[in-house]
Amino acid sequence: MDGLHFFILEDEPIIAFGLEDLLLEEGAKVSLATALDEAAEVIEGASFDFAILDVNVRGEKSYGIARTLLDRDVPIMFATGYGDSAHSEGFENVPTVTKPYSMHQIKDAMNRLSRV
Image 1 (cartoon, helix red, strand yellow):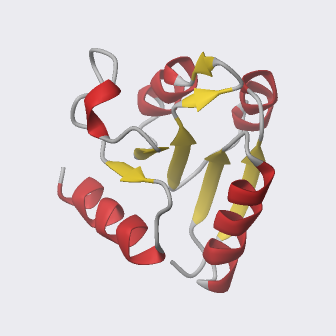
Image 2: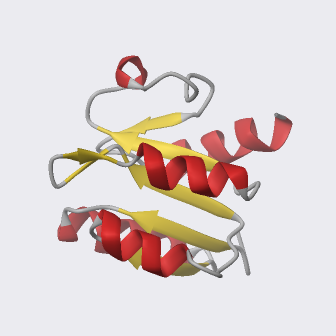
């Protein structure tokens, strides 16, 4: 993960900073947002190698941000406590890591994205 740039959208600060720390320990660069409007600002004009998006952000779904990133060919994965079953149409093939997740699960999801 050395040098890869990740975008994280997570509204729970403890989870967001924990994930950021995991990725930084692996040598990644991280950009973080904790709300959908903040996410839209962070991703505007930026480029990322991967994105990890919480599905439910402050009572709203992150699918608009997900679509914007996919339209820019940024591989995304969802992070949720609800598993794969709750995704909106068009996101059925997006890997999901279930909270609490590990670096092993994130790397596995990245490998699945790389094979797509």
